[in-house]
Image (cartoon, rainbow, N blue to C red; front, side):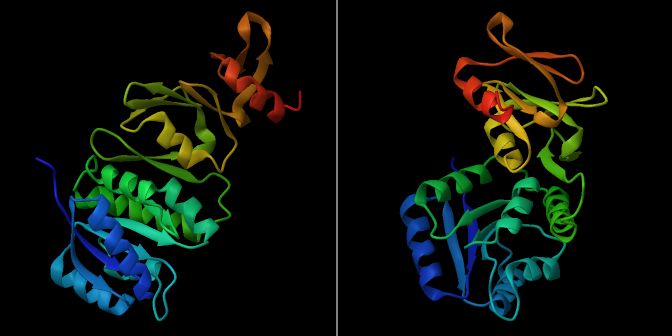
Length: 252
């Protein structure tokens, strides 16, 4: 049986909540809208009163923005899907923290994807709280020389420094992340999702099954069909369809 999610929509622009309400009702039958709020103040009141499973939350609002609202509601015991019009830095922080977001105007296909990801998420409060805490760390410390990516594991989440990642390898519906110290982290997320979180950094998909950190690329070899050698000595095949982009990155 499909799991139902009780949702609250918060945006100071009524036409935005009205449009989102229509989109959710027509494309996401597992979402039950229990409140629509056009101010952060009303949103805070309804979240405390109704205890939703998920909140669709605008970032830019008068009096209190979406991030300030979440900060005041901690600890967080519900999922959050942020909605933003243009804040590039906030978007980067969301990706690193494994917190969903949608860009305005909201595309229905991306809305459906965000809602579908709710199915696989743990309802445990401490996991959501860890992601929110890391979100604020990423936002408050934009100058960090080694930001962390938030990824799920079997028991909760891992916070992995991005510069410590040598490469990521697809493993069925999981991804194996190899670190500089030789540690391997198996995370319950497909390689495409990990790549989406890391696309603002110097990572490159060189093969359907491999995403490499270009900072740890030791050498590129044209022999044997083409492969890269990473800083730890591992050899990774470069697929024919990915060679052009690799050559461009290496100015070949």
